[in-house]
Amino acid sequence: MLDAVTVPTFVVGGLRDLFQRSEPMSYEILKRKVPAKLLIGPWTHLDAAFGAGLPADGVPLMNQIQLRWFDQYVKGLDVGAETIPNVTQWVYGAERYVTARDWPHPDARALRLFLHGSRLLSAEAPAAGEPVNRALQVPIAGLCSASTVQWTAGAAGYIPLPCFENSNASDRLSIVYETAALTEPMYLNGPIQADIWMDSTAGDAGLSIRVSDVDERGIARTLTDGLQTASLRAVDASKSRTLDGQMIQPWHPYTQASVMALPRGEPVLVPVEVFQTSALLAPGHKLRVSVGASNLPQGVPPLPSLLQSLAGILSIYNDAARPSSVVLPVVPATALN
Image 1 (cartoon, rainbow, N blue to C red):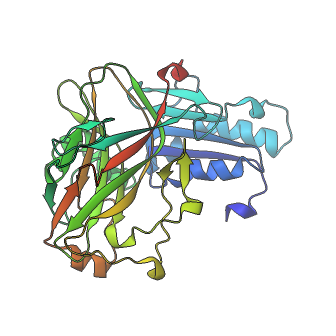
Image 2 (cartoon, rainbow, N blue to C red; image 1 turned 45 degrees about the vertical axis):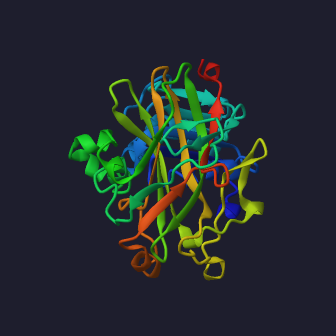
């Protein structure tokens, strides 16, 4: 569909939009052939429709952006629409809009953090014999979480519940890994990949990855998440995104021909795409990666996989031979200035 677009295009989206994944990727394709700009707010789908909270940080009202764009590219008036920053994004943690010259962020570098048997998340590779962590495969995880707000297009957010802002409750059904308290700010901007070694006592399994910012009080704020069915773990490397030579956004075919059986008791590597985010973690905060078997608001697997996934035990491996990890797009915090 994007191949047919031949007119200047202004892409608007949200960090919690239904189209969180596709909006920046659409900009990425369009910028190669037409004038294009990208605006990402702290929005759900409903909020993005009218630019909730604007004007802010130099970003005007949505209707003013629209009028300027159409004056330039429909009426042919010289109103300087081409001088609008290429990319304007809300940054969680900084709680403001920042601009960048492109998306993905040109200054992003890949950082791989490993999941340890002790539930630590660190850059140090795991040792041999680190313990396996396990979780029950239940289909209702995430029922009350930030995902509930996102995947109802924002409608659920009009009923304020603590679990929408704090993911500690939904993480109780997951295996939680955390870094030590950060000594320096960590700025994440872009997609994330989780490479999880797992097996299951069931015929199939889901893998839900939730990435959160945990403050000094222990309150966990969901930044983004991803969901993958183990039997659909096949990856086309030629279509996947890499950063610094590491895959950071896997491309799964999701075809019948690509289905791979999940052998019971035999660990397999499952790459999970975690949708892009834009967030600044402050010193003293921790980065949390929660690994579970489901995230109901985000989606359920095809019925055959769902039936095979029920009532199993999910095992996550974290040792030298099977090093589960996440690859993060880290940008220098100075880029926010």
